[in-house]
Image (cartoon, rainbow, N blue to C red; front, side):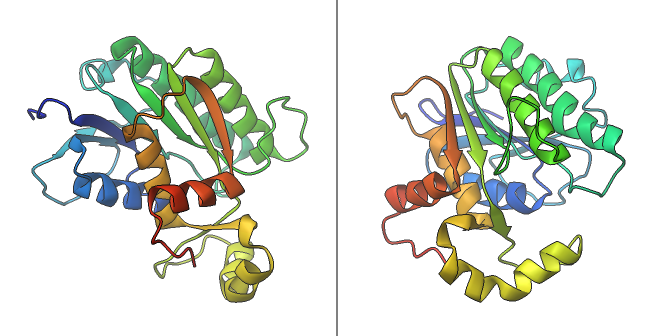
Length: 236
């Protein structure tokens, strides 16, 4: 896949998930994105002139991705699993080890690439939290910050509203979906629609912000970013 000069070569991991799915749609339509490489276990079953799919089954070892990850400009990393969906050891492996391993190969293959990482509200880089999600996301963040990416954007959304109907993973998500109309009015800075979050992750990776190093965006920051990049957007 030949990418026109001046356009971004973008990698997306987790493109079958709630946020990654929207990130892919937005990236394929984005005028500044010339090519999108999707890396994952499942085939997408879609066709697009900008899209290249690279099947990869074991994110514990990403050595085979050296070539697909070479000469890339940015990566959107949305790979993850819901708390309680797998045993704790597996949860940590997916949340921390997979992130670190992918970042290692991307950093070596494309030293100048931007990394946009889907973390979560409450992520604790001290790793002292009693909540496994907070500890593991914090551990992953800390490792990414130490990896030396020239531009690292860490997104910490609170409740991600699915937008499209789906089977909710557990009771808590079913409850939050049911009360969302009231919740978003009372606590607007604690919610973000999945499509808006995805757009922000792509936009900040594609646009030249002029800032280097690692930046952490909390839910309030993400909402402000969406309004800044898309002034006409009304966040539901």
